[in-house]
Picture 1 (cartoon, rainbow, N blue to C red):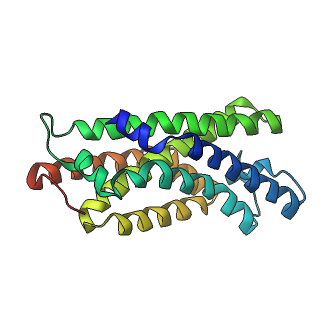
Picture 2: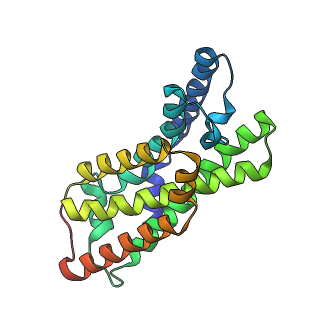
Length: 209
């Protein structure tokens, strides 16, 4: 499954499009705010005042990642069979999908945050902390998405709710953001979502979106 997903999703065209997107996103920040505004990525939650652009700049890379590498997995019929059909090991696809998101996410966010670390001169620990936060948000949102796609039997509805969740998390205060992303709470969300998916697969088997 991982081979199929990598061949389908990670192409030179997509890599180039992502690089252009990041360049335009941060170039626009330079002209709109009069600064490179590294804080909108590094230590975003420590800002006392957030311009709307900073919020958009913070969540845009997350939403881009979700749409390119997560939501696309079962938004098309070609992936539906890979995602929900029972196989010899009926839960193997959960491991495959989790490994795929984790691997692609690690590369995506490692490169993204390291660029800001090098440009801003911020501490490496700060970059690592924000990278962990984003990985947790991705895991939390992804598991919620796959869970909701089974609750609503509609991938588009699940994607919209998941995106709204990301927006909500991005607008929280420092303390609330830490509680929602760097505490046992997101782990509970992830485990609960996975348990529901496993129960749903056990009872209903294939899911037709």
